[in-house]
Amino acid sequence: MNYIDIILGLLLLFAAINGLRKGLISELASLAALVLGVWGAIEFSYITTDFLTEYFNLDTDYLNIISFVVTFIVIVILVHLVGNAAGKLIEVAMLGFINRLAGLAFGVLRTALVLSIILLVFDKIDEDVEIISEKAKTESRAYYPIRNFAPSLFPFIDIWDDKTGKDSDDVITKVKEALTGADKK
Image (tube, rainbow, N blue to C red):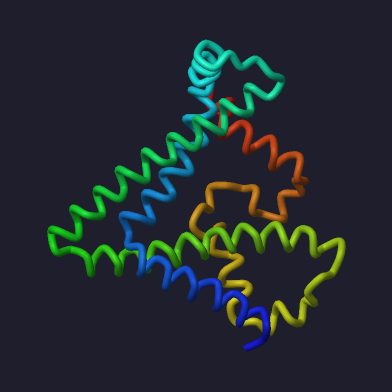
């Protein structure tokens, strides 16, 4: 066990404790709030722009940014309120322990996925500028299992594969295509 294992282990332990404390419903509500907040702000910030212009006579260069942020915050708060209400219902139904146990598992899996993506990006950077020696990575019991978690979960995404010869521009293009649906014909 080396310093990489300790760092990754502490991050996963923190996620486990946080997930256990919050429970699955709250963890899912947090994730949904973020995703729905970004999506809703992209799709509906024009409504906020119209509202701010009409009722507050705002007409600045930053109106689009202000509208995006306000829309994002409102959606995040609403989703959190719904999540908290659902969490209270779960507690009343005496399913609190199951909710917390599932929250622990979800928190660890979510953190492992995020760490996996970070380590994949880190490996790309580390090819040019060695920050962590290959020996330290190899001696680590957690580095490669966590690094390979995202590709094993989503093997159909070929941007993980170093052998394809694709550079980061291809990755950015693939993400844009996936988000816009342009790759579906």
